[in-house]
Amino acid sequence: MLPDLIGMTGVRLAGTTDEALRRGIDLHHATDAAFHSAPVFTQLCAEAIARLAEEGVERGTSRAVAHVGFELTLDGVLSSEPEPRELYAAALDIAGSGVLEGKLSISPASGLARLTAGLHRLARASIPVAYAEPDVVAERLQIILAPRPRLAMRPSDFEPVRRWAADVRPQVVARRYELLDQVRRGLTSQAG
Image 1 (cartoon, rainbow, N blue to C red):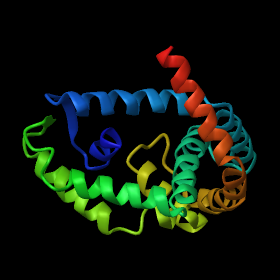
Image 2: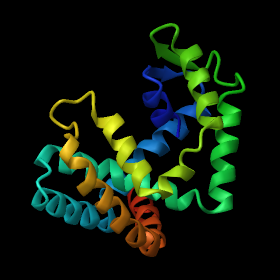
Image 3: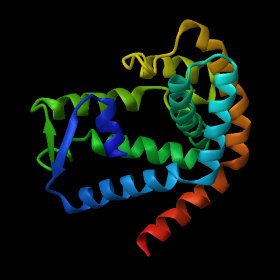
Image 4: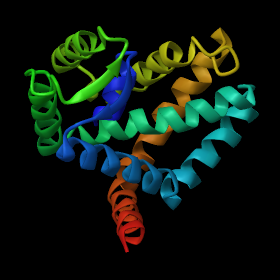
């Protein structure tokens, strides 16, 4: 999770001196590649883009909502199960404990303190469990996309996005294990 967590706190990872962290970062990137090419992900994103575009959401926004919204919804689905939720909390606790100090090259130089503070905020937040709620997903998408003018949601986009988030959740619930199997197979094929 470290690359995503670093990005969420607004700092940049330049590298690591720790071999285990490097392997974890490499695994993260390989998992992202397998996830983004998984047929369940690509199919549900394509359906979302078409639906949102039909409802008047601009293409760039539709693509961003489909991609990021699917990931947020999946986080909400997976975090409804105790084991993933506990593993997520444990990872945040470990990362926020100071164990990363001296092992990461981060910019700006004050980035490690910002990262640690961000990890502590995430550990106390209701996210990702709150992503089970379509309103929360739509609100979070507004915040995430707002700084990017070509992707930002217009006020008229909120309701179509909220409806899509409500409709896609049961599909994500029903297909989550299929998706996870596709990601595992993708990782295996990358390694082989």
